[in-house]
Image 1: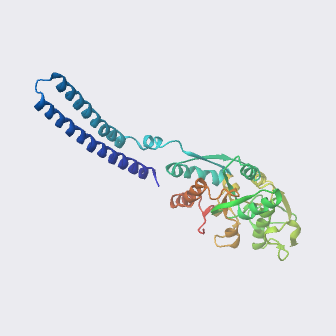
Image 2: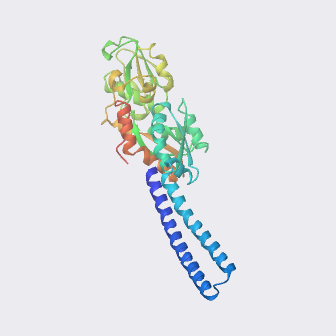
Image 3: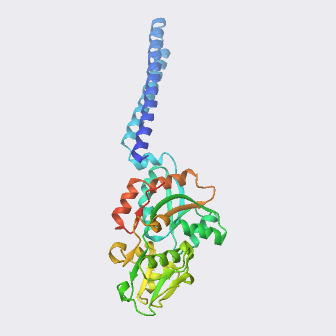
Length: 333
């Protein structure tokens, strides 16, 4: 629910309360007047009774005017002031990669604020700490990784992280370095690929799909350079931490990069990549980026609100308008 909805509910209940108060006070005034009349009839010469009656009447009239004045002030108050009256926002802390994850989260902040949550985003430049700080309980969630990486991380690190929501995927791309096309590759050229298990496999599968090499049958999402069975040009593969690949792109023939690091380095998948995963490819669907939390926290109200906002039409539109096909909202559940 947006902030305007909250304001309407708040003012409506306030007006109803004011009306009730007015009715009660009107009854009080009626009773006071009746007492005044009776007093006048029974002892028309009593100054004390008249004074008491006048004082009571003035106090009741003053009390009756207060709810109306307060209601008018509530109706004219800015949205921020009305929301502040409801109390502090509940904090949701999220660890994220800079691009596009932190940018998407920033776009989600005002939507979550309207739901009563203060989204605090901390940017990390590696793929390890965002998971460790969530597993330790230091952060509520993270948003930087795809499903295969999360599953592999749990196995290798002994963490207990689960998926709270599937948000988007980023087509993996092959980018030019010293060579501008696949046809320009020469004997012994070097191609940079990520060194973590799932992303290296994804890079090698993309190279295989484009005729650069052949992997042994069944290598799949666990493929490494050791699974290459055919390499006609004896290409060399420089295995690097994914975040470092953009920094060496001028030193290698080609570079296969994660979409977020390509974006962070100023590359457009649709304009700069020699080849990339298509939106209907198995890889693009497999490597959907997720909100991850420590097991048991996926049903937390704040986490569910976060996922709901990130899957909303507002955020889908933001993604489509901002990233030129380099980030694509996930359509499934």
